Image (cartoon, rainbow, N blue to C red; front, top):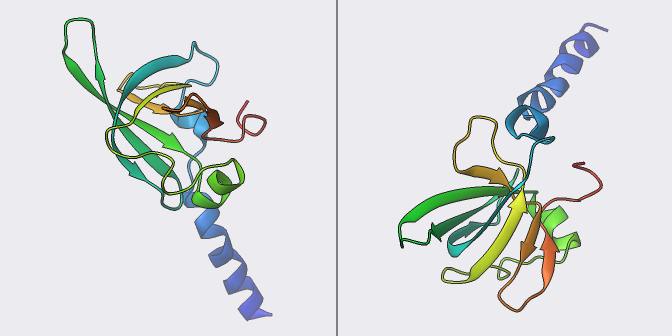
Length: 126
């Protein structure tokens, strides 16, 4: 009985460490939409990340980071490790970080070939 009492709290620790998307991103605000050049794509657990260089009309570059879901879910959404490569120009839309930084949740992506893919299950993050 004592072992059960000690094991159950230990099983809950990984769940406590996971953040809520709603805690980080402004899920109810106007989504951000940017077009930029991929500099890096991290197809990793627990969530992937895509880094973009976004140029404004004056040619100034702003660095952006977008979070996507985990690799297993990305595979089910049609992604592979090769979906995005450095140098690809993509358009991404999704909620921006609540702190106003150039960080967002990449919900919808338009790839260089014109295909649209999702970076999170659209039904799960609404």
